[in-house]
Amino acid sequence: MDSLFDKFNDDEEQVKFGSDMRNYELYVIIPYIVPILFWLPFAIDKNSDFCKFHSNQSLCWLILFSILEAISGILLMLDPPFNFVGTLLNLFTIALIAFLVIGAWKGYALKIPVIGNLLKPFK
Picture 1 (tube, rainbow, N blue to C red):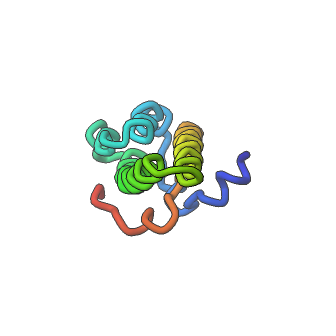
Picture 2: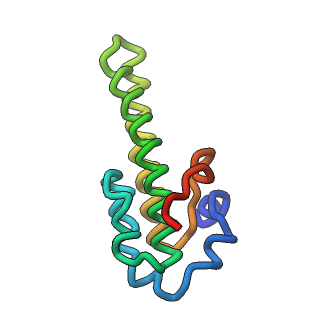
């Protein structure tokens, strides 16, 4: 499973993480589970590169999560086979949440593809 994390890991960012990351691992996984709390890690420690990185990625996750849930909601209202695709999209979202949570817990700098490089308001 670590090889999968390595594919999405940003080694340049991970090198910046200090030894403080173990103090904040709970605070960085909460926003992946409850995306509206994307600001939480930054509010906990504004000087931690670990917290800033995960706040930025959590904001990207909020945007991606909103898009996935909107598409899924529309598909679930339609007749088969579209509602089946909506269910699969929900299962994919749950798997993605688990992937992001485990990666953050292990201290990886997982970037969300495409939009992960676009938004960096927490500096």
